Length: 311
Image (cartoon, rainbow, N blue to C red; front, side, top):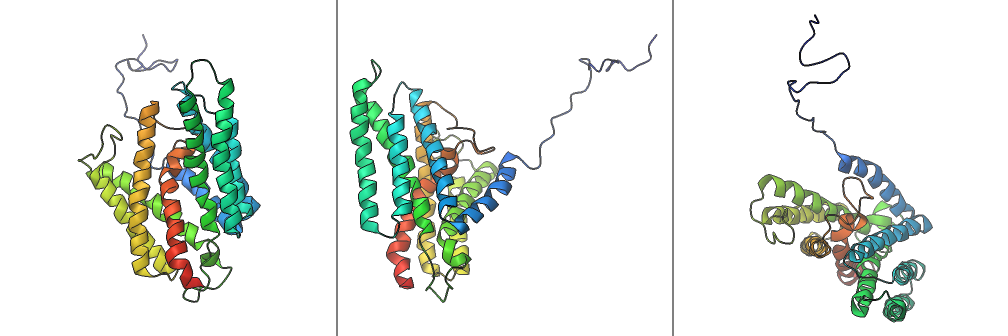
């Protein structure tokens, strides 16, 4: 007769009376390791600029646009994908190649947005039976504006140089990528702080039907983190503290508004995430949602209030 324990057998099969061990929690998840890999690569690309930055930026934008178009297709909407891709890529190309001529750049971007309307309307003459002209065209153009146009400010921010402010030397780290580094760091720190504080202390939810996991406490913590990061990084770059206070407040509010707007769209489309290409984060739109709203206002703020100081 076998004297082995009743909880195990020689073939390695554990019987029902074996104690169930709780699953071990990983101390470091996918989100952390994604950041470890992606952040240094992003910093290098931002410093180098030019085509090494432009090509990945266009690829990222196109992935985000495909995520949106794939989402609306779940609702029976048929966007003119090729029109959206071409016009979105055209906006980023104009931003990159005509960066120092604002008149021609604005004209080229206007042509791309107007072209998205015209070409997507033309595409509706061959639309699938039963699909909506307005819905198809609207989704196409919305993808171009929300993803293509707003994402182009990522490249615009890289064109802003800080040399001339408080003796910042030209062609150094602060001059070459100080602006875009400040904006991305502040907004992403806000996202992480809002998530941590909301999970730890959050009880009151502003719009549970839109984003059931977001709380007022998390929003306040995220806004505070954005303010502290903007003021701290800005002061380290020699930028006026009062100006950084207003910039941080503006980015903090609009960045979180962008997050809520993304959640609103996802609820409409009946999806949890736009994609899974970024481990631990989801899709491109799940990671860049706050930046899509924060980058344009940050660019305008620097152009209107801070760039004159560098003249």
